[in-house]
Amino acid sequence: MRIVFMGTPDFAVPCLKRILDDGYEVAGVFTQPDKPQGRKMTLTPPPVKTLAQAAGIPVYQPTKLRDGTALELLRGIAPDLIVVAAYGRILPKDILDCPRLGCVNVHGSLLPKYRGAAPIQWAVINGDPAAGVTTMFMAEGMDTGDMILKAETPVGENETAGELFDRLALLGAQCLSDTLKLFEAGRVPRVPQNDAEATPAPMLEKSMGELRFARPARELHNLVRGTNPWPGAWVKVGDKILKIHTTRVTAGSGAPGTVLEGRGLAVACGDGALELLTVQPEGKGRMSGADYRNGARLRAGDQLQ
Image 1: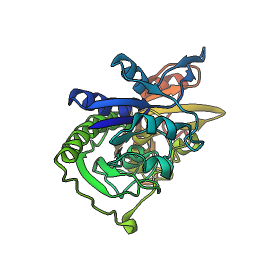
Image 2 (image 1 turned 30 degrees about the horizontal axis):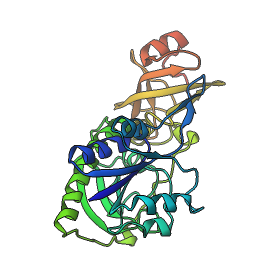
Image 3 (image 1 turned 30 degrees about the vertical axis):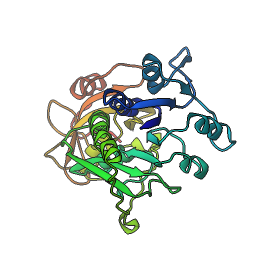
């Protein structure tokens, strides 16, 4: 089976590696263009490109998919199947129709839940007890195609989106491997999604990470987890931004935003209290909430926000 792989970030790397380890022919890899990164804005290749080049696979980085260039490349490669994992671009119909066996996507949710760009983050933000991956036939809609296989995993109470991201990347690779075996056997299931059960998973924005202590502590804890590592949770202290990296729900009550008694930095919420375990003031490194409290001379009864 001749495969073209389309993917860009770290999440897609285990999928490509698994395809290669399983012995399939990868005739080409499509990935996003190199981008400048870091303070020096060094032009950096996507992780998928790095793996593909190391494996000696031709790499293509079209800037557009609708001008016919990518389609001509694909027709020249003539893949049986296109496998997509976090490519970051929507495939037009002419590309979806190009391979003989269609296009398969590895999506980081249990569809039809969390269609969109940030399914893993929203699963954590919403406090879901389980998450997973779905392989699916691609259609023109956003993650609307018929499902093939699903794999589920529990989400830890304190697990961050970044940690879950890494686990689901490996789970997705295994699910993809099982899916490709079904293609080889000629018995791939097609399970239509129930659109009535669909939920969106739009890209996160930095403003979404603001902690408003009038909300329940559990919701804020999930928000901190779900925005870690990006875009990050934060609270405004005076005219400064205090980044919040890790928290835990704890006992306590008071007016929302009030610093509570104790050695750590616990803050009263709309329901319960949230202990800020690891924080980062502007222009400084990470530190414990207790060290920040001492340095900022915060006392019980002070308002953090």
